[in-house]
Amino acid sequence: MSLWMNGRRALMITMGAGAMLLGGAAIASAEPAPPPPPPNCTAADLAGVSAGVSAATSAYLFTHPDVNFFFTSLKGMPREEVRAKVIEYADLHPQVKAELQGIRQPMVDFRNRCGGPVPPAE
Figure 1 (tube, helix red, strand yellow):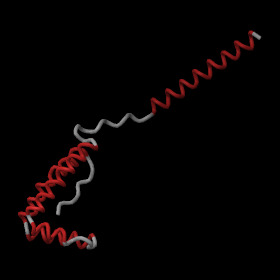
Figure 2 (cartoon, helix red, strand yellow):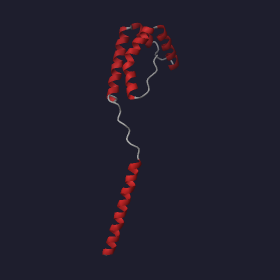
Figure 3 (spheres, helix red, strand yellow):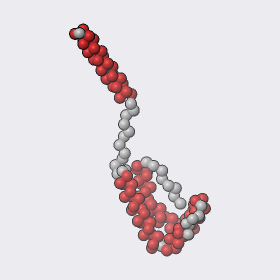
Figure 4 (cartoon, helix red, strand yellow):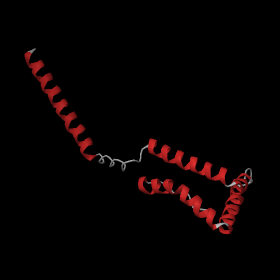
């Protein structure tokens, strides 16, 4: 019986060592963890920047009724038609275009710093 126990113990030790070797090989071959995101690139940061841009856009539109009317009139139009009208409006009103680009600049900066697509400027 003692021989049987020694054989069983040897088998268990061998199996355990093999499992450790295989487990270690899997860990060693795994890709390294991705680097942490740049500072101030969390979901909370994105929400804060988005909220600031939204609030500034709202204030701008309320204080510029003609611009507010233009953007309000686009509701319900097909996306391509909206895009064409916004480009045309921006070309005809360069100051409005510059002011709106300034308002959304924090979002552009966030996306440039943190990665992700930057919506096209119109």
